[in-house]
Length: 199
Image (tube, rainbow, N blue to C red):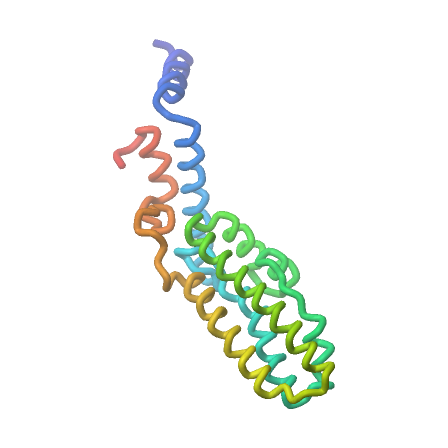
């Protein structure tokens, strides 16, 4: 059999034995492995592919709330203009050295880990906007802000800690999610799929 015939036969074999979903899954796993190889030395978690630096955006709000109670006029404008940013918006606008890698890695983070992280961030966004509105209304009324700001900062810290734990891999993904566990290397996944090496 000629080399061309061998290639054609191999292509037919692949088409018969491998589904499109298998190929997509192997490619995604390979990409995750590729990103993990570039992560050492950055602030991106090698397992989750998430950077907890994103949460600095919410830490800034906590600091504003703490400062506002003692100096309302000095920080009221900053507080009222605060708006939540998505993960990608935050890094696009930041001076984070590895921001492009952070964005690309986030897009390929293990699906279950990213879903949990995004849910935690959505809670943070909702709570932050509610608290900014509540504190803003109290600010306009001239009432003391000490208790309100202290409680608001405390509530945000709890939600920040939850999101931080997910980003740093301290809250494990479903143990059935091999992608999240990183049990299969990128090239190994492709090799196993096409039978070019022993898995």
